[in-house]
Image (cartoon, rainbow, N blue to C red; front, side, top):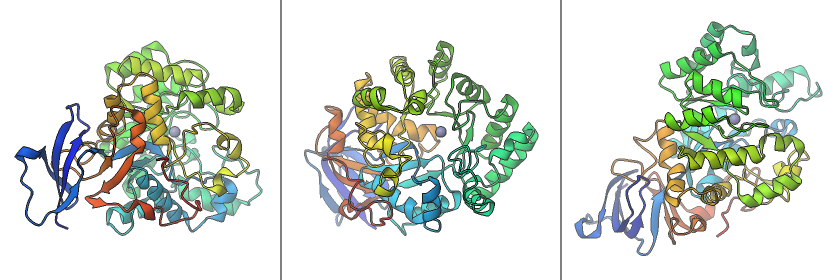
Amino acid sequence: MGVTAILGATVIDGTARPPTDNAVILVDGNRIRSISATNNAIVPAGAKVIDAHGKYIVPGLMDANAHLFGAPLPDLVLQYEGRYSDILEEASQIALKSGVTTIFDTWGPLDPLVTVRDRINRGEILGSRLFVGGNIIGFAGPLSPDFFATMNIFGADTVKRINRQWEHDVGSDLMWLTPDGVRSRVRQYIEKSSIDFVKYAASGHRDPFITFSAPAQRAIVEEAHRAGLTVQAHTTSPESLRMEIEAGADLLQHGDITGMAPMPETTLKTIVERSLPVAALLSTEKHQAWMRDHGTEAMRTLFNDNLDNNDRRLIAAGARLLLTTDGFVCGPPVVNHPRVAPHVKGAVDYPKRLGESHFLWLEAAVERGMTPMDALRSATSNIAEAYGQSADLGTLEAGKYADLLILDADPLHDVRNWRRIVAVMKDGILIDRSRLPIRRILTEEDPGAAKE
Ligand SMILES: [Zn+2]
């Protein structure tokens, strides 16, 4: 692969620096060689040239929390057994098509996730760059009361076989162990799983109760750090959030959710003082209005005015937010499912639709008073830093991966311009977006396409 020169665009590089007009980006293989003003640039003979005059170039977008396996519903988990990798591949292609070049998958079937991540990294298949967490330590698999209680209708062997693909020996039986017992199971999991980061349960999934004791949470964090991995927790209540912070988590995953109570002022202060990254589930004002009128009571336990006010307070206080969508593939078998349909069908600006919801997140951030530049950094460099990946990702600088978007209007001028993607480059390769997703399992035709 030779050198590609992208000529003439305004480059917004994802650092705090002002944009560079009329720039030349040289891409060598899968990395950026240099970015300079046109006057100072020398384009090597034989370079492939992309004319981008009048366009805007930004780092590829990142999502700090999505679930590429978007169908953990009991019947679908069985129906698609053996094809989980295909579903993940499809999801990563839907994301890539819409400008998300990196995804942190924070809960899914580990082996298929690792397989797809590695195949994408080797260039065997197209897709967003994946980082995987595997199980949320402490949760049982999808066929369990933590997710979908199945009332014994499937048979014990089936339930065990399916759940094992998520749990990998760090499921809900960890609740019976001492902190040392938890520590050794987490250590084994990290050693044999090839995960990229650790996520554990500090709150339950179906309820807000505290899961692990404070010493057990510290043991999990220590084991992650011992292995050089970042760690985050699933929290949905003020106390689980406080305990996660006390335990030493690096990133607060949906740390803006505090359920039926607001985030305490002391917690907010700690987050800001320690500059702790908060992966925040922003949704637009239109969606909030829809949720107030049409959301189920269960949904409104978490997705309510406390969440919105927490986000507004975090933004006003200058906290470091990360774009996070919880996104999944909203194909017909999933959205027509009786358990999903009431939440998704008819929802205005539904915030978890993979391939679309990152645009809504950026719009919601600006609606809530975030500057367009901070919104851009929340979707790029902040995420790379929070996950310890900023040597390679998150900004457009010499030496980093050439993951970038070419837009035909300025996203700092109008947040809706994020949708105006004319090209996606990932790993130095211009992606043919019209082909994506190549793999079609949950989608029929083009539901992942951005509205343009
Ligand atoms: Zn979570």
